Structures are given as structure tokens and as C-alpha cells.
Image (cartoon, rainbow, N blue to C red; front, top):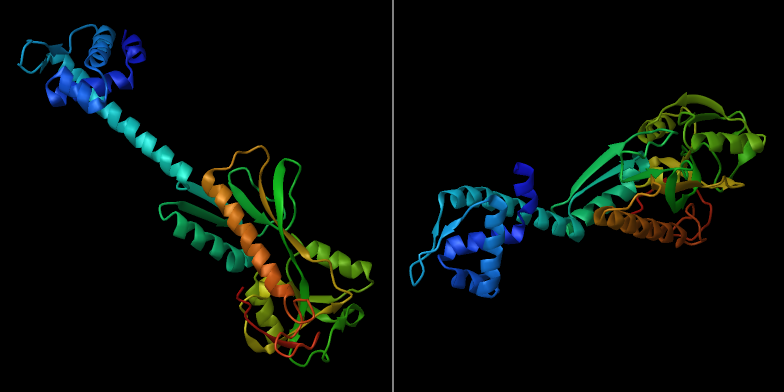
Length: 328
């Protein structure tokens, strides 16, 4: 019986009932709702059939209608249902407008350079949005519980992807460790080097060295970019890092060199679960990330010489220089 009542009740019936109760007449309720009086009467009649009794006493004439005891019960719960329906409709509209929640996976150099601009623009456009960030250094991307994930590879077959940027590798050394100009790969054979652990793109970097017959002597491994640079400053060795990891670093004790031949760049992708429909907020996050990556690439390669290792002030290509901040 209860299920039958709920199934037969409709929000339009409850809306008509609330209007009649508020206005005291079917005519004024119809005017408020933009219906005809007969339409309101039909809605109330349908509601009374659903609940099995009268919800209004109708004295007739100019006297206002009065709600019955059964009607008072129905109206009290009906107003709660109407409020929940209105809240749900408002939430759907906010979601379609870009509010809601987005979960994004990231790693440290993206967190330092690309992601802050994505977050800032999302929050500027949608102040009510909920952005959750999860950072992990891993070679096995776990996209299942995330809307999006930044990763230095295209992921597995069950993951969809969009390539964002080619992130070129540079040699970072102490100020006087190498002569001016590009550094040949063979000069790094046996040279002390600080490096990331053998996960993610570091495996490909070391394989590229091996393919060239070069085997640097790894003296320290650490997952932190700052720790790598600190050890280079301390004279422990040089390091090969992607350009994104050097963003915003200003230090006269460090020098950047191009490598000859250049190593294949690190490729940064946005991943998401294949077949997933993006929310408007996730869709916007992808659009902003693509724009940021394009601007960053243009900034790097707009330097004299068309490469990220050129000296932007003098136009002298491949002259080592202090690591400087690159604000795109």
C-alpha cells in the first residue's frame, strides 16, 4: 500500500497542493502556478486518489478551502519532497555549470608548474568547485578512482590519454664542472651523477645512455628534484633532469647544458579511464591543462636558437648559464 501511494504521487500534485494551501483557493493557486483552475482541480483530485482520501475541505463560495488532517500529513511530507527536488535540480544545474568535484592525480614537477595554473583558473571560473589532488611517484598509474591523472607515459590499454607536452632533458652541473657549450654524451661516461630512482621515465633515460655506450656512475638516487639539485650544488655530481623539473630555480652555483646528441624528451600525458564520461569540471580541467602546456612549450622554444637551453639574453646558443625562472 505504501509503495502504491509513493508510486502514484507526483511532484506536480504536491506543488498544486502546496499552492492551494498557501493561497486558500483553487483559483489563486492556479494564477500563482500559471495553470487553469480546472487543471489545479485535476491535480488535487489525482493526489486524493493516490492517498485515499480528501486533502481539502471545500466549503464553497468565498470561504477559503481548509486542509484536512490527512492533508496536513501529506503536505508536511510533500513540502520536504519538494525542497529536496528543488535542491537536486539546483545541484544538477551547478554541476552542468562546472561546479562539483574533480579528483586529479599528479607528480612533483607537474604539481610545481602546470597544476597550479589549472587549479587557479578552475577556482576563478567555478569558486564552488571541490578539487582533490593526489601526488604519487609511480611507474604504475592507478587511474580507476581518479577523474584525471598526469603521467609521463600513455598508460595501459584500458586508459585513454592525451599528450600534453614534450619535456626536454638538460644536464645540470656545478658552475665549473664542464666547459662552456653543449656537453657530449661521451663525456658523461663514468662521470658521477645524481639521479632519480629507476621508475617512470628514468628507466628510459638510462637506457638512452646505455644505447649510446655511456654509463654514468650513479652516486645517489632520490625521488625529490630539490634533493637532486642540492647534491649537484654540493659537488656530488651532475644530473640530467627534464626542463619542467628546473622551472623556477635561480642559483648561480648551477649551470644548464644541452646534451649532444639530445636525449629523447620526456612525454607528459593526461590519463583517464577509457570509456568514462567526463564531468564539465573535468572537461574544463583538461582544456586548461592543454592551454598551459601549449603556452609553456611556446615559451621554451621562443628563445633565441629555438631550444630550451639557449641563453635568452645574449642569443648565444648552448652557452651554459645559471638556472633561471621561466614564468610562462
